[in-house]
Image 1 (cartoon, rainbow, N blue to C red):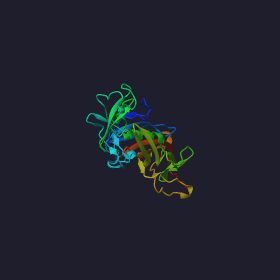
Image 2: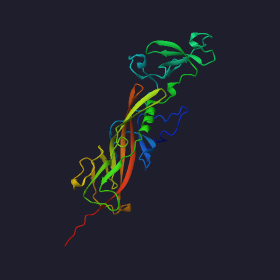
Image 3: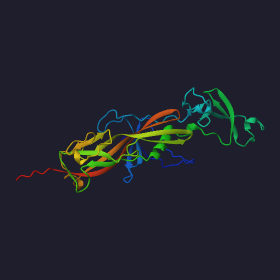
Image 4: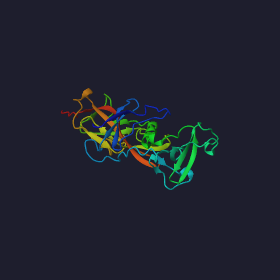
Length: 319
């Protein structure tokens, strides 16, 4: 695959104790390339530029990844200001930089005010500094004192990166596989008989929906994740894409086909390793996020689990 960037999910901490991820291209799909077999959670994500499609087919495959969003944003609601509404702003203006914390453009007062000036707020020159705080949305220009330079939001995380922190807190994992015939050496299905597949004991972590919030760099983002579809690699060269979690099989269903997620093998598994087909269920997630006056979508694909099932030929008895 072209342009693949490998990264570990949320393994580094900034000096402030916040997780950091590299900024993602607006056209990248995020795919799990290594899953923890015990938990089903992703260990390593890779970013794959390009247009997504159903496995083996070109074309649209649901909501597209909308990119990183803007790190600098205006939100005047805490001041009772609703116009303009919250949204992105340029990170610099006339040599000043934007602060999400103060909701204004910051620049040092040069030369500094003399000692005793009210703008020092009781501090002496050399103890911190005085800054202009320019808020073009309201026409407000004031001076503020700060011990340290206010954080430059243009160097901080993007909304997508904050959303990734929220996603990490979701502990998304691959589904637990439900399949009939059951896995195991004492269970054998038959060629031509329906196979049923489903997510066993589905919950918010395996199929969603699940919602978490995270904050970093003056940005708070709320993200909601849910499975778009599950792709079943049946081990015989066939992939089955199921838009639901599937229907659990019951003996009372007999030889009926699954109403929403099934397959029929046309040859036995006797020629396969361990005399069994390896069946892999791969989840494709869609995460929508909102915050910093913006909204966006993140695609996460590739969370998977595998099992093995045996398929035999029906024996015809002749008296």
